[in-house]
Length: 317
Ligand SMILES: NC(=O)c1ccc[n+]([C@@H]2O[C@H](COP(=O)([O-])OP(=O)(O)OC[C@H]3O[C@@H](n4cnc5c(N)ncnc54)[C@H](OP(=O)(O)O)[C@@H]3O)[C@@H](O)[C@H]2O)c1
Image (cartoon, rainbow, N blue to C red; front, top):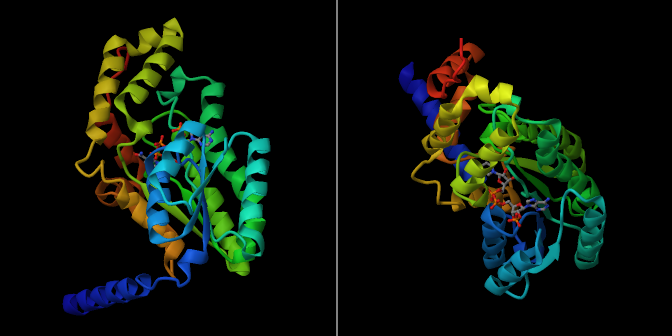
């Protein structure tokens, strides 16, 4: 019985491996638009796809980021300035893309731009702190997608949305997890809606990786700023030690493969170039072996684990 099961599982993985390694042809004719290419995953993906011969349309937040990227890539890669929180900026970028892709349409749209701060216990934050993240990570993504979708439909192409394992499991306060849960919901409904038009939608769910957004200074600076703005009542409830422990606690997330960003960009590349892309890609062993399994556990078990691992507020009962 166990042997039969092992053979069946083995066959399933073999078939999946064979199916997934089939790659599309004519990659050099395909246009891919990527948001958030100044740094991190977006920047690496732009360079990786450029090397692979695709026609990369890289959207950067700053002219400095765009110039640096152009200096590192072939003349085929083109850049545009895009702030995903501004509808006028999205409309201008859409016109720019339209001029370039013409009747071929846009093969790939990679919604990668994102921020992760302010991140702190919810009680320390204001509504505006949540809005700030949601505007970039969720509403910005939706705005860009709706604007470019006619071009993607024309090419019967792909939409690749960068979510996070924190879109499957909410372990800390602030708008980040909320925004990524929203990305998951948006992507699921979009995938089901667009299958009738030959468009495929994939989500990338990375674990922890070392990029600009996860730098210690960014996290600690943001936590400190939220603490400074918290009311005296909240500061008394939590105490100074909690703040220090929270900043130190982040080291727990650091994993040996965190510098290998290609674990993430390889998933993005597969979603864009494979004949049979997956709907979800988890990137990083922490995502595969810790966070995703945790997301299937009963809530009371995850609550207990978090209770044991998290710093204790000064006035905890
Ligand atoms: N790093 C991780 O551990 C991790 C894990 C899971 C998911 N993710 C997701 O991966 C994606 C990429 O993040 P990353 O880790 O590569 O961090 P990153 O290096 O900070 O990249 C984020 C990019 O988004 C850009 N951006 C920020 N606000 C923008 C706006 N309003 N409009 C357009 N672009 C904007 C940034 O531009 P500037 O550099 O000019 O600010 C930067 O190029 C994000 O969606 C993030 O949530 C990251």
